[in-house]
Image 1 (spheres, helix red, strand yellow):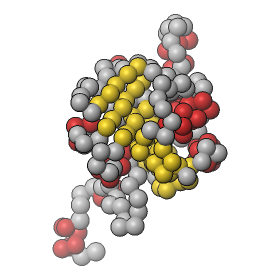
Image 2 (cartoon, rainbow, N blue to C red; image 1 turned 60 degrees about the vertical axis):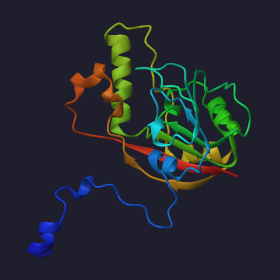
Image 3 (spheres, one colour; image 1 turned 120 degrees about the vertical axis):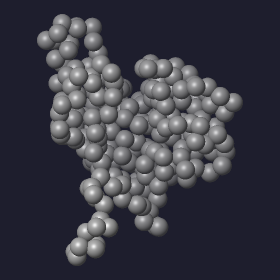
Image 4 (spheres, rainbow, N blue to C red; image 1 turned 180 degrees about the vertical axis):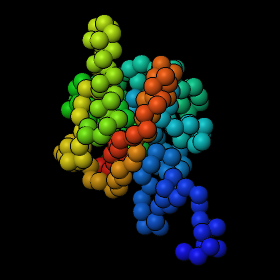
Length: 222
C-alpha cells in the first residue's frame, strides 16, 4: 500500500460492517425488515422494548410479545399489537407470520422444545425465521452466567431467576429447526458486544475489554 492508498484507508477497518454480496440473502434484523414485502406480517417474539424500530416500516403488521417488558413494552399503533405472553404457549393461529424474529430469547426459556415448536407453528410455510443466540463457549455468556449465580448465592438474592437457562452451539441450533421443517438460508458469527450490559444496573461493570460471539441464523420454513 502506498502513501496515497494509506491516506484513503479507513482509520478502523476492523470496525466496518461488511456489505452483503448481490447474491446473499438478508441476514441481520434490520436487513430482514428492509427486505420484507409491503404489508407483511411480522412477529417479534420475546420483544422486550422492541427488537427493531417498528416505525421504520409502518406498512408492516407487527405483533410483539414478551413475558415481561423491561424497561417497557413497544408503543402500540394501528398496525402494531403488543401483548404479554409465554413463547411456549402462544395464543396465535398457525401459519400466521411471514417473518418471525427471535432475537436473543431462546437462551432465557425453560421449555426449549415447546418454544421452538411454537416458532415453527406460527411461521407460515415459505416464511422466514430469524434466530440469534449466544454461543455457550463464548466469554460473554460465561460472564453473564457467573454474574447471575454470584448475585443469587453470594449476594443472597435467592429468589432471583438464573436468566440463561439454555446453552447453544451451532450444530444444536441447526438441529432444533431442521427437525421442525426449516432450511438454513444464512448464518453469521458476530461479536455479541455484551449487549446485556446496556441495562443501567450493569453499567458499573463496563470495564471488561473482551467480547464473545453469537450465532444469528436465518432460515426458511419448507
